[in-house]
Image 1 (cartoon, rainbow, N blue to C red):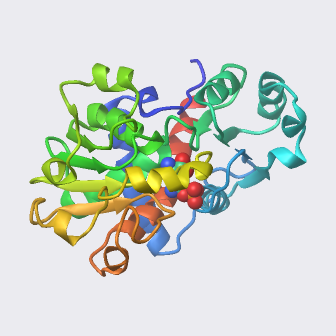
Image 2: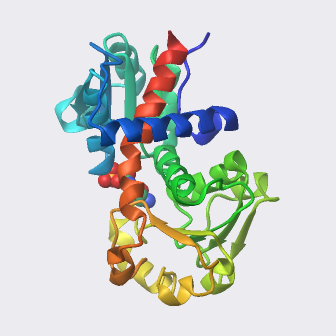
Length: 303
Ligand code: CP
Ligand code: NVA
């Protein structure tokens, strides 16, 4: 069987995604009991980070240790990748020595090129276009608190960025309606919207998009790589904020999420970040459990 990768949510079937999320819930229960069976002794995860990270690095590294394996952090400045060694050559060499690899980088084509030359599973840990690992955690969190997300209304507030585009793919894989509220000029990729037209709509008014929503999600106004546009973006995104007023038009049991890191009083208010009913911290923690389930799935699929 060819090696399975996880470059986007579309690489797994809806049934496989649900299987992983079910397993993630079991692994979370094990974590609560501090019960860590050594499932993958001597297995090594290679972690290539061409962008910064807190949650992704910690969750992958801790997760691998908890399963009896090891994780290796590889920064471009310390490897030949950073000095221009072709990504295809790096993929062949690294995959001959480790069991599974995750990459956080800029262009999505870089993970695709890496995966094409890798003999072991490759996980997309964020590209300019997609962040599928975060969506595993987001959906796990929704299910944990509210049950199935199928048929629900999800509202995206803000930039049509990598997170928004992954929500578009999630709408298809997990069968929900997605309303995107973004300013003109900051829409997600047109091909993704068109391919999912029956489930996805783009609106300009955040209140209209949030009406009766079951989940409202947002992200920073300037993603990694766009930091120098922050002044222009602050103007463009004014009003595209999750706050109590916006929540008041959503369903009475609506959840709100943020993948973090957050900018308080920009895309989300400080009081909602600090609200004891917020599930944002569960969402962050669930990165650990859902990615352990993902690693287990990909390694078992290989054997
Ligand atoms: N949400 C997320 O991916 O966080 P990090 O950038 O800290 O990894
Ligand atoms: N859209 C953000 C997500 C960070 C986890 C970024 O790409 O910087």
